[in-house]
Image (cartoon, rainbow, N blue to C red; front, side, top):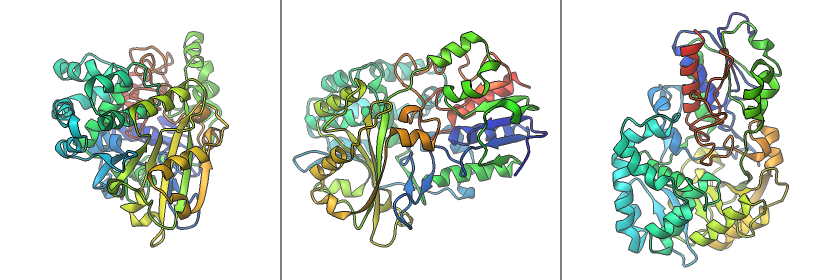
Length: 475
């Protein structure tokens, strides 16, 4: 185990953003210590045998559309450090009660064809966005700034600012396209009657067409391991099993970067910043939580719709109105009897995830922050609705509620897995309203977690931008 002596920079927290920040600083020639409280690096990008030996489950993030689009990850030699992407034939399937399903694939035309009467409307919406993908990504995965490509950004932004409920109703005529888009937008973990919930649906579909929704062979842990291996190849040092409670570990460092929520930053270093800045962080709003289940199965899920058998991700919620109702209940502090459920079927495409003939299944629904309600019954009822006989295939399940999520990762305050509410007020002004949201009034201290733009997801871009801020200000 290393000591902190002599390191010019210390990064606290080895999630994807902490790893990214450490890499950028090391690439710039600085000696960097990366400190992690857990015994494994990765934060929300880890894998473990949660149910039974031989069944590999992703502890949080599972499907990696944003990682595949990340400019930073794309610039790093992660394949040479063991990372291999797998692209399921169908990125997303959204089944309906009539036995049909809408799908998302790399092809706009194939996706549109699954939407029936709304095929042309879908093509007209996404063809220009996908064409502008390379222009939009730097704007979408960074802090707020005047757009370098205002026409492309305006084309995206005029729709993105709208509530997903009204956008889907006005843009699409049929139940399939409306429900399909609602499921995409629900990744926002917002009431779909709130502004900017549409943005999440647009981004996820656009990324699906441009780069796909891949999984990491062997588990999401492989992403973190590849990042960590590359960081160490640059001369960086990783110290695990060390929970930081003060700045003593970074006493000699010129810069300290926190891959933590504002809550942990305040506990460790709040006293080193002015009272006004501390008030902003204390008033930072955390979002709703998730209730997660991991299943070990003796076979694949028996979906009614064949399209679901080819999909890495499956959205369960049926119609627009049903998904809107589920997310509204979550946002207003109650629990839906028919929750919107997100599932990932990694083992269908990655045999390393389970024993021969067996499968894993990963899923969750949204619940109020700090919820203690057991949502196992409602979640499994939704799966049975679209895959009759599913429960007969369960060998073992492990449930993880919001309290357990926070216990496993202190950044998941109240079970919030995306680092804070991502509504219009906090999308870019997170964690405090500053021109440089990664910096603090103390030139040594920076926040590089998903509580800074662009927010939740495995992309490393919060860490990238925070490290660039530190390189400008600390040296």
